Image (tube, rainbow, N blue to C red; front, side):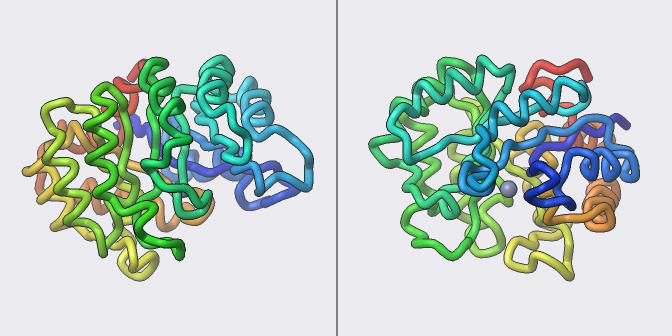
Length: 265
Ligand SMILES: [Zn+2]
């Protein structure tokens, strides 16, 4: 099976050697992952280098056609819709958003034009959801239901499916928006029992998701470099061991992402 995985954070080697593109490529090799989506660093993670994270990633990826780039936005700048355009112009097909880390409310007014632009440009947004040491009212998964309502053609993933504590809320949003087919469950860092316990959902909840929302709404992610090859392999093995069809497994492990990003399977 050709695995196409979402959700790898990559960094310039000077910032985080274990999170470099080369390290990601080695992990992909070890875990037999054919393609991956890599997120540009957040602006404050590279401020000491004085580089533009999106431009940096775009340049790096010229050498690697098995990695698909996603951008990040700088919320301290007012031109968020323009940033969405710039990201699309760099050839990126999505944007990683971390409302807790970036400290913004998912439904904040200043993001309205950004969402409208992302919807128009067909960018896939990946939201970190799940307790992350910031006021929960800013990134409660239920806010995503409003997002789906106001931007019916906006495609986005609910990463970590809300984590353990908000799994049922995320499930509510996913099932409530099945008809549009634009809201996806990000199967990321949720299958390592002895690690990431706050996000651990386990195989039974995966099978429940397949029966309630369908495998077409589920997208496997790495959470590199926070997960190493061992943990990534552990998650792949759990998915391969689920009591679901081979087609369901293929959907989760890459087919959905390939279809969404229009990358040959
Ligand atoms: Zn992440």
